[in-house]
Length: 78
Image (tube, rainbow, N blue to C red; front, side, top):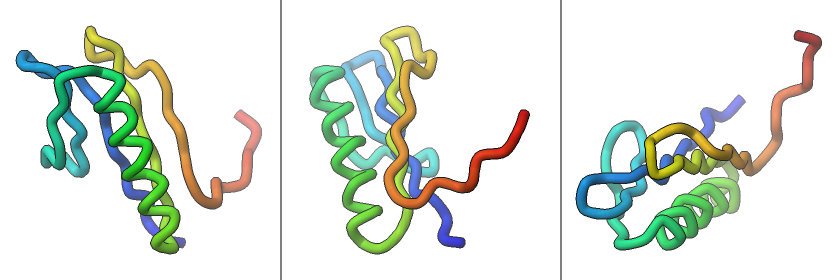
């Protein structure tokens, strides 16, 4: 199974950033712009034949929402 490309939209002291594997791939002035970029990157990973995920953080750094793109693993009890 292909590895999922995960893109985080998170706050910084100067605005917002999108990161992948701990590396900043873009910076933005607003949360909305950062989230749009993370979602777009997740879709691009899926469109390239892989799996994508956008992890959207609140202004305090906590995860607010996760969106996955591509085939999700089968659900299991638990």
